[in-house]
Image 1 (cartoon, rainbow, N blue to C red):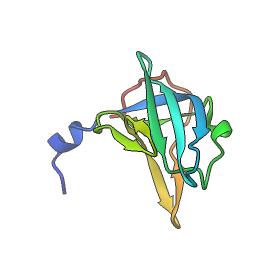
Image 2 (image 1 turned 90 degrees about the vertical axis):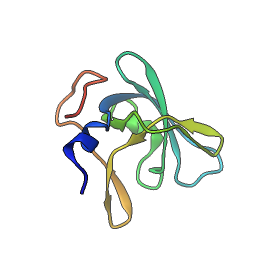
Image 3 (image 1 turned 60 degrees about the horizontal axis):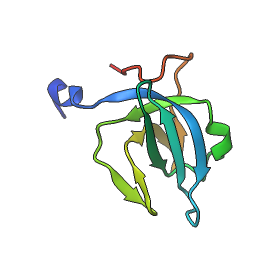
Image 4 (image 1 turned 60 degrees about the vertical axis):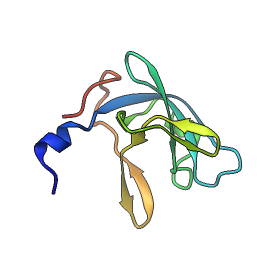
Length: 106
């Protein structure tokens, strides 16, 4: 269990995918670039086994933006998308309707 104060430390915002491409020589990784409203952000996600990169362009999804950067296969990832694990496969969460990029999830 975490406290509500710990939960409030998570900065989760809606990002709109402006580009997406499979990471070369990686089976599961897709490099996503998001419009976050006031800036662009690159995130590398292990979703290539379930999603085609080109199908994600224009989609909105929640991004944890205050996670320490991590380098995956030579690409810096500056956040993490939120997804559900269903039988070992990711299912990305999407807003029910379009919202402004950078919208804060509370």
